[in-house]
Image 1 (cartoon, rainbow, N blue to C red):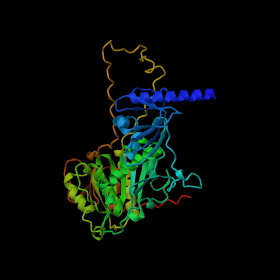
Image 2: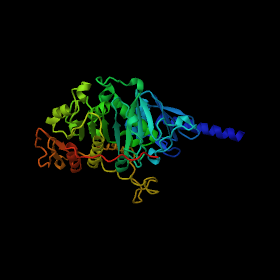
Image 3: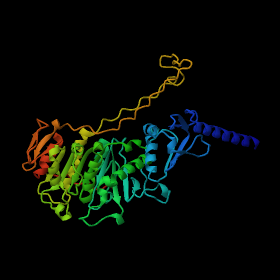
Image 4: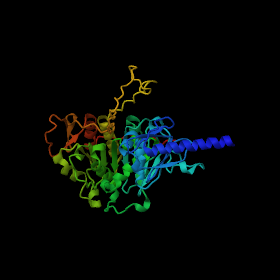
Length: 471
């Protein structure tokens, strides 16, 4: 018994000693912990476990049997946190909304494999069950977001925005990871699928009154970014915070949300499709004009009149024309206002073709860790001891590492594009990217899209038969 008491007392003393070092800003290195955090004073301190992110700060353990301590956000270098621990930084962003985010990290996130999306509850642990089997979910205000990871490491995010009244997830059909109507985006380009639903009581069913959620600048843009931070924590995929985004929007609210989100964060957008919608109210800007965006609309549609919207495909394309946008007029030959299989097929194929040009190259694998004895025992690679400052001379300060560059879409090369005549379906290769287009002409980003576009606007494009339902 005395020996047990002695061991417990020794552990308490070690914990208290470690805590004193933390408060005084002295580094413990990585001798007894797995995660090193940089304090506001520039000193790094190692922790055994980062437990939770709360509105006030982190809770953590310095040693395995030690007490849980609190570290306020003010005590941390948040810039270093964003550079060194994107996952913890994502939890910080979520915690500022008043939430407590469980982390339970005992090693850098790069060492972890993403967890599988939870299945429906079958009488087991309901806390781990999903309301949407195969999808991660999180709620931000009146929006519930759902995310499905690709089979490989995500290179981007595809936002799927459907429906007239904000019930996008309900229209995805039988989408399973790597096998479903959106599977090609997951398997060909490693995109995570992101969609949403609005609670029934929050939806506005008057077609002439658009819900504020479609206007990203009024809060839904920030809500989507907050959801990505939450999914980064849930999935242990920190890159989700910064990955470039492609968007597919169809119908009244679905297309309006996509159009307005493009104007909210144009520098992050790979490409966008807005199909059979209206309420395209955000003003075109030089930045948003650079984003490749396809406007699909029916030649015989008068939806914008029924919805009392002044901003629809024709009017917005005309308004943006002086900016020479990378936007494509996709008028469906004799098309109605309702969605059609051909319009859906064309929109998806447009994204597939454009993503080939816009997705950043895959990041190279991280360099291997230094061999034993290199950079860890006072020896450089040549075997000589590093120089030490002379007596009275201040040691040289290590430069602050720059934050890693966020992945950004590849710039559109208009010289590789085409001009298409909406009335005749004629397609011509661009010879002078700066030359203005004719009244009935539209920009087409590449050869693959030009072939699809020509058939679509003259009524010759056919959609493949739908695949049989998964058993």
